[in-house]
Structure formats: structure tokens, C-alpha cells
Length: 285
Image (cartoon, rainbow, N blue to C red; front, top):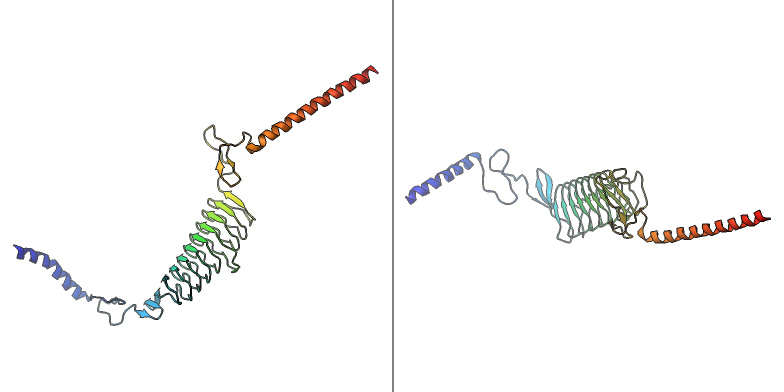
């Protein structure tokens, strides 16, 4: 009974072995791959080279250069110029190609951070995200062509920016601490600082000097229902409904205004009384 069971299990294994032999498949060692003719490969399609590993003549897995480690590079021409940069990750064709001393950068996508040389702590995810960044640091770009022109002049001014969306903050060059969320948000910001744009196409029509905040699809839109409270903003930018004045003015200004109006009314009443007495004196004469 046991022998019958073994024969039953062995038949499919033998069949698989015969099929593999007929098709020319062989056991592979590291750095080799069978040819497309289904015969044992005499020349590996990809193998160890001085810069990493090739497929079809193109380097796709790079041994990160330089004297430091903790770098990872996958993709044609990815991370090929590094000297002392450390803790970088480049995934994609020409990702972080020009990086030399920049560190703690993450680039995922075709030409993501491709011209970065010394910039540090940048994160780019998407086709040509932060592609022209040279030395600026601590920027985050998520989306195709997000922060595309950032630091294109290598002035080291376009720092601390965050862009999420296709072509978000596309033309930003020297602006810092800008935040864009949405398709082409903050598209026209070039040198402005502390500009925030929320929503598709949100932002100024031309460059501005911040701080400034733009929210799409708000102006002229009625709210539904009744009893909606006013919204006011604190000095640190916090939105809220408590403490807002009924007329939309800051709550702290309502009391002084009331006192001022009362004083003006009292003075007007006194002037009216004086005018009345003067008219009486003139009439008697």
C-alpha cells in the first residue's frame, strides 16, 4: 500500500522532470539566466560587471559607488556618480544619477532626483519628481513632475517644501516651506515662501510673497442647512467656531467698538443740547 502511494506521487514529478529536460531548462546559478531559445545558456544574459549587474547590456542593479555604504540602487544609470553620499535609495531609470555627497535621499521613479548632487533628506516618488534639485534639502515630492523645477539654479533656497500631486509646485524654484496638495496646486509659485495651496489648481495666478493660503472650491459656494456658525482663525492659524463675533469681526474688538459708539452718541446728544440752548438765546434777542 505504501509503495503504491509512492508511485502515485512520483509519476507527476517524473513527468515534470522529463518536460524540463525536453525544453532545455537547467538549474541556475547566481548571475545567470537561460536564453530565450530554451537551451542551456552558454553566455549569461546578465552577469557581474564592475558597476553592478547587467541585463541585455544595460546596467540595472548598481553597486553603489564611493567609499561609504548603506546605499541601494536599482535601475539603468541609477546612482552612478556617488562618492561619499550615504543612506540613499534610488529605484528607477536615472534616479539619483548625479548624486555625489548627498545623503538620506530616496528617489523612486524615472529621473527622480536625477540632478541632485549634494542635497540631503529629500524624498521623490514619481516620474521626474524633484528632477532638477541640486543642493536643496528636506523636500518631499509625491507625484509625476512634482517640484519639477525646485532648486534648478542650485541656489540652495528651495528647502522644506512638500508637494503631493501631479505637477504640484511645478515651477517652484527658490521658494521655501511651501505646501501643495492636489493637481497643479501652487503651480505658479516660484520664489514665494510659506505658501499653502489645497485642492486641484489651487493657488495664485502668479508668484506671491507669503505667508498665504489658498483653498480651491470655497469662494462663492453656499453652505447647506441652517444655523451654520462663523469660522474664525486664531493668530497661529487654527480654525474654529468658538469665540467668533456675530458680525465676523474678532471677538476681542467687539467690546471696544461698543464703548466707542456709546461715547460718540453721548457727545452728539450734548452738542444737540448746546445747539438748542444757543437757538433759544438768539430767539429771545
